[in-house]
Image (cartoon, rainbow, N blue to C red):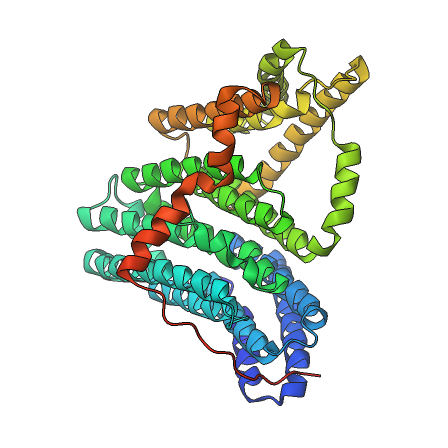
Length: 502
C-alpha cells in the first residue's frame, strides 16, 4: 500500500512550528504549511499513478480535498482577520485541526482515526470561541462541547467492543474479519450502531443541529473550515468502515431514517430563511443528512461524490459570502417566475424527468453492459431534477426544451461521476426494499409540500407550515432546554487582551 503518512506529517510539523515561532512569522508558517501539504498531496497522487503498489483511492481523494481546503482557507484568513486580536489562536488551532484531519485520512488504525476525530472536535471548540467574550459564542460552543463529548464516549465504547471481538484495531484486519462473515456478531453489530450514532451526533442531525446553525458568531474562515471540512469527517469514517457497515442492518436503517428526515426537514427550513450564512448552515445540515442516507443505502460512490462536491461548494459559498448582495440581485433577475395556472405540468414533471433518466440509463447500459446504478439513486435523481421542468409564466416550447436539455445533461454528468467514484469505492448492491420505500415516501412528501407552497402559498396548510419551518420546528429549543438543565452553561467569561499580529 502506498504510504500517505507524509501528508499528515506536514500538517503536524506546521502546527508544532506555530507553537514556537514568533508571532510575526505565524502567517508565513501557515501559508508555507498549507502549500507544502498541497504539493505533498499532488505528489502522492502522481506516485500512485505510476506505482505498482495498490493505492488507497478514497484516501487520496480526501487527501487532495483537505489540502485544497487548507490552502484556500489559510490564504483567505490572512487578509480577512487583519486587525483581529485572536489571530495567533486561529493559526495554531487551524493547523491543529488540519493535522488531526490528516491523521484521520491517512490512518489505517481505528484508535488513531477516532482519536484524530475527537481532537479535531476539541480544536474546533476553541475556534468557536474566537469571540469568547460574546455570550452567543459561549452558548454555541457549549452545545457543541456536550454533543461532541457524548459522541466521543460512543466512539470509545465502539473501539473497546471491536477489540474484544476482533482482537485488533487495524482496519485491514477488521475488514478482513468482516469479509469472512455473512452476519456480524452481537459485539460488532453494537459497534456499528455506536459508530452510526456518533456520526449522527457529529454531523449535527436534527434535533441536535442547533450549534451548527448558530455558529455564525465565528468569523467566516472558521465557518468555511467547519462546513466544508470538519463536519464531513463522519462520512469519511463511515466509508472506511463500509465492509462492517454493509453487514449491519440496524446501523444502516438508523442512518437512512435519521439522515432522510433531517435532509427533508432542514431543506424546508432553509427555504424560509433570508440570511445567506444561515441558509448555508441549514443547507449543510440537509446535505449531511443526505450523505448519511446515501451511506446507509450502500450508495458509497454517491456519498463520496457528495462529500467532495459539498466541501468545494461550501468553501466557495462561505468565502464568497461578502458578495452575497450582488449575487442575490443577479439571482432575482435570472430566477424564473413559475406559473400557477398549468398545475398538471407540475404533476407531470417527475414523469418526464423519469423518462429522460430511464432512457439515458438504457443507452449507457447498451454502451457499457456492466454499468449499474441503484434504482433508489434513480428515484432521488428523478425527484431532484423534476423542478427543472416546472412551468414558468412565460413558458414556451423553447423554455421547456431547455429544461429537458438541463435534465439530460445533468443526468449524463451524474453517470460520469458515478463511474469515476465507483472505481474508488463501489457500493454494496441494491439496499433493502423497506429502506427504498421509506426514502421514496420521504422525498415524495417533500416534493408534495414544495408543490403545495409553490401553487397555494395562501392555503391554510401553507400558512400553518411556514412558522414551524421558519423556527426549525422548535427542535433546538427543546434540546437546549433539556441539555442545559443537565449540564448548565458556565458563567460568562470576561474579555482579555490578545496580541494583534500587525
